[in-house]
Each structure stands twice: as C-alpha cells, then as structure tokens.
Length: 319
Image (cartoon, rainbow, N blue to C red; front, side, top):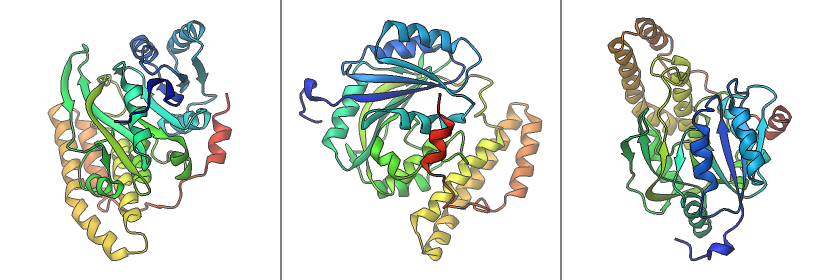
C-alpha cells in the first residue's frame, strides 16, 4: 500500500452511473459521501430515468457541493453513459460506481493509494460481497491475485474463463481509458468487460483482496437475465474481439485460441437454455436454440477495428 499521506492523496472523480433505481440511490450516495478520502467530485450520470431518480439526486446536489447531477439528452445505454462520464471527469483518477451498491467508507482511499503505488496499473479492483434482494450478503468474490497483476496474464485467464473477475465497479486512470477508445457501443450492456480487456493489453491491473463493496441484486425484470440472447451475443462478441486482439497478425495463434474457447462458449449456451427450461421460460429456451443454430461460429462477423473514436461520444453526451 502507498505511504502517501492522507492529505497528499490526489483529488479524484467519482462517476456514478444510474438508471431507474431511485429507491436504492440514497444508500449508495450516503456511502459515497461518507468516504475517508473525501476530496472528490461526484458526477451522477442518469441515463434518462423515468422514476424519481432526478428528484433524489437534486436533493443530494443541494446538500453537498461535491455532487453534480447530469441527465443524458437521450438514452445512451451502459456503454455510452460510461463513456460520457469518463469525458466529463476532471481528474486522472476516476472511480466508476453503480446505483444500488454500497461502498465501504475506505474504498476510495484504498483504491487511490494502490493506483498511486502501482504506476503501471490502468485500473484497480477488489474483492466483492454480493447481496440478495433483502440486503443480506450471500456470496463473496475473492481472487488469488497479488497487488499488481500483469495485464497479459489477466487477459489470458479471462479469455478462457466464463466470467470476468473484474466487475463494472473499479477505479481507472482517465488517460489510460482515453488511450484505448470509448466503451464499445456495439456492446451496450457488457462494455465494461471489453474495456478491461483493451486496457489490459497495454497496462497492468491492481487488486485489493478486501471486500470493499456490497453489490446489489438485480431486479427480477432486469434486462441482463439468463434468457436475453442479445446480451449473450454481447458476451460472445467480447471473446471474439479480444481473441483476435490477443495475437494481432497471427491468424494461426488466433485460430488455436478460439478452438480452446469454443467448448466453453457452447457450454454457456447449453447452461442458459437449460436454465430457461427449469424456470419455465419456454420461449426464451426456444430462442436460445435458434440462436445457437444460427451462430455456430461465435466469431462470425466480429470486426475488431470498428470501435468509434471519442468525438461522437462528446456530441452525444452534451447535457
């Protein structure tokens, strides 16, 4: 951990992404405003919520000068909203946080200290506690990493595992994110995972083994559910894109890697279809079968070089 004194810690930007979770925002905002490292701007990016989100945020904005609320002129989805937040951040150290989650009071301090201590790391993440719908902790996500994780080592692990060890809640270096292009709009729901890959090809990651965050359970009607095959296609696109990025100009190595990945992709498809059947979601299961038949090759149509630049993002996010 860095030996930088508390007073010498750099000022940071906290970007809170929110959409239709007015009921959960107070707990999140209270935990953020009660941090031991309090020298920050808190930028709330509302992706055009239709509930009382604006009312809740305006109340906090009126009570604390660190809080600034922005409502997107149109719905940008997760990828666009996160890119807009990064552009608006004033400082190099940017904490990306989500509505509904609860943050330990020393989270921002620990994140900042580790990134200061690890100059080759583009992001820092940590162990997490997952809550059920009643707020009780039901699972802890730990990983066997040291404080500094070599980027390509983590890439190679993530390409062959069915999930990401890095959730969408992390602190990043703004300059590093700007160097690798925006969160990919082709991946509106899971763009954070693709961003971690792109950062890890160039930089390292830092890890804190303490559960500094309690992650809220998804709502029953959340669009990222087992039978949403559009989201599943995003997941597969991430593997297709980043397997090609892993070995640029080496088609043989890419083909060998994708051959190793294919059984995992089909296992995930089968698990999702079976899960739909067990829940009585026959229509979703049928769509899954059709999806699998249509997308036998999960890499088909993946164009690695089509990520947009930041210019269009800046225009979209003007509020």
